[in-house]
Length: 75
Image (tube, rainbow, N blue to C red; front, side):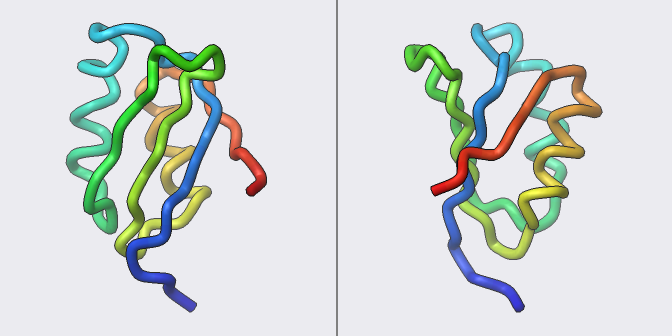
């Protein structure tokens, strides 16, 4: 069951431009993401992913492969 353009949010430790640059290729190459951004001003470094089919687990896997911590925010 796919929800198109679902918004997924996660707490991360992606806290600066360098970190964003490190995770960028992993998320940019991921299938099923139409947009993503990290709110580094937020204390929880919120990653918001506009999903076009990618699952929460797949996003978490990509971010972990980039070397960062990530946990889902239960909305």
